Length: 177
Image 1: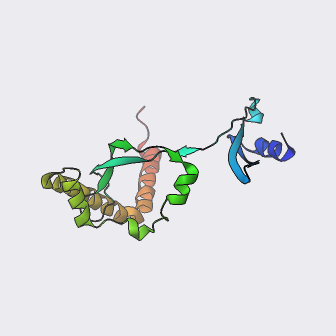
Image 2 (image 1 turned 135 degrees about the horizontal axis):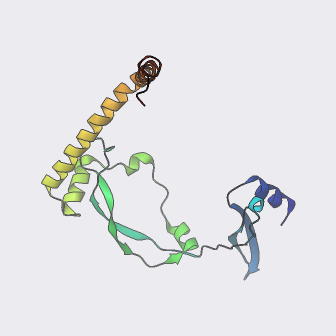
Image 3 (image 1 turned 180 degrees about the horizontal axis):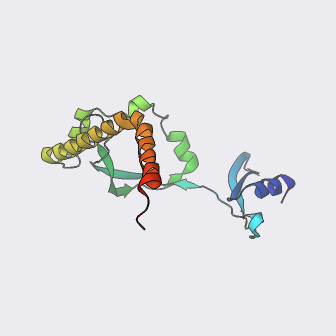
């Protein structure tokens, strides 16, 4: 173990991971793999066990959608991932990286409420009544959150009043023990 790793391991109570890049020449191309060495907590006297990790392939799962329960959805029914999924064939990580589309912006991931309702209705088989029940529950939770948010400025005052009441009772009412 080199001095830097020993120094870092001594300062971390959790597992320390060090990245190492191995480069080998094969058929005129350079292949690089990432491997990590994990060291135990030297302060506790645990043994250092090197672990090597190499990612060679990736397998993508296509999850079904279902009616969600997220009260942060501002309007319309929320969508969640279902437990059911289809597994696609595994492909090499390099192949995936070359053919994957560019990352989407946040605004591109937003699904309009009408489109969410149509997806739930026609893809997930959710009824309009089920969507209405969930949307009503969401509105109730949103109102409760609004009341909590509105009362936050008064929470310090309320805590001070409760503390003063406890102190008053201890000092003048006394304990009935």
